[in-house]
Image 1 (cartoon, rainbow, N blue to C red):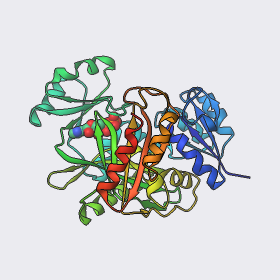
Image 2 (image 1 turned 60 degrees about the vertical axis):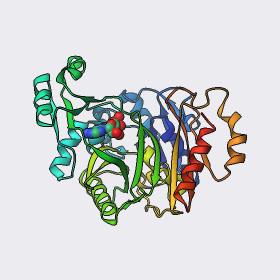
Image 3 (image 1 turned 180 degrees about the horizontal axis):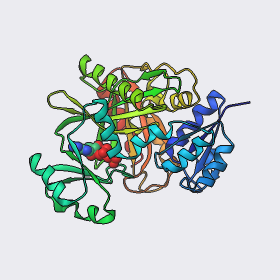
Length: 372
Ligand code: ADP
């Protein structure tokens, strides 16, 4: 009988696992949080992932549970594991992707390079950190942030007064890193411990949202490639990650690398691999969580570029734009998420691969622009 993989969360990441699951002969099922989500095609259940009975009933139908996001509460995950359900990544690993303060403390123990940071519970503590760091810092809500929500540059303790007032929980404060660019390192790890690392990529954020990814990161020294890879391996192993891990990194002007944050699932910074690597991250995630041998991560061509389609067609539908986009750019691989257009929303992306970076960037941007 086919192995049954249950994905909690019905967004685009679950959607993009469906085709590789079908290819591998896996029976993929999705617990979506609502009707009509991106991964609707494989949604066998609709319900609240915070409710243990809902998740438990879904888990009964599958051999392994994995995720499209990191928001399933620890209590729910631990109760599943206690009942013998295979959960990948497991709660012990996932906690570090769920809470940025917990992550910072653990990475410090592991000796992984990261920005200066502190946990602060009031304005005085935040002001003390600001005073020690040239009067500027980044404050983050430890849980529930995404796409730059829950991240704020502050110059005075009063800039975070509303967050302190909300629930009294500690906030994470970090030095404001003057980075030259942002990078991401993808790693896949099986429960058995086998690991593979993708080439380190450059990610470009606009308004806190990933806009473009260049693979491999252009103009990167061999030393930097190796440092990124070893940080990725150290974290995957040190935290016991199973499945895909994305390590978001800052590159500083003195060529140091600092860890920003972690995602334990396929990640936007790895979408290029769908068309640019021998094994894409969605297939790799499925292999890893079902403990199958991992696939080759070699790039298929010198350059891959991913451009997100943010917002979507202002008028009409995606399909209205297909004819022109595909006629003008037959080499562009267009991925759509089945979502309604809304300003700033991630509704799809375009991958292009080729020999010359400038040409690849141009084509990917031009093809994506058809969907604006
Ligand atoms: P999210 O969980 O919303 O993705 P991140 O922690 O990744 O939040 O922060 C979002 C963006 O904010 C980062 O991609 C980076 O551009 C900027 N940022 C985050 N932390 C720092 C920092 N310590 N110094 C400078 N910029 C930062």
